[in-house]
Length: 77
Image 1 (cartoon, rainbow, N blue to C red):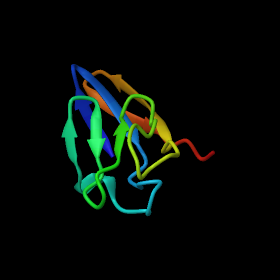
Image 2: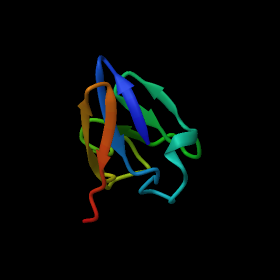
Image 3: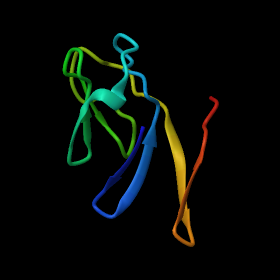
Image 4: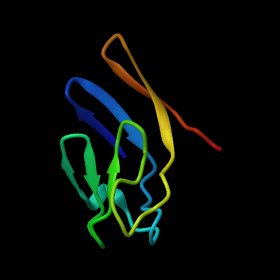
């Protein structure tokens, strides 16, 4: 999921760590992405799970903006 918040781009996996649901269908509130299935919130800057039922962070990917183009380096870890 690639988002633009407060002038910055962030990218996290499109997977809720609670039930593997798609985070891209969720609502973005500031820097928090809310899973549409059970309401778990993730910080798009860090991937940190902020609320139950998710307790594990999701993977964060490096984003770079160069000459108006947005690039994402996928973190395979």
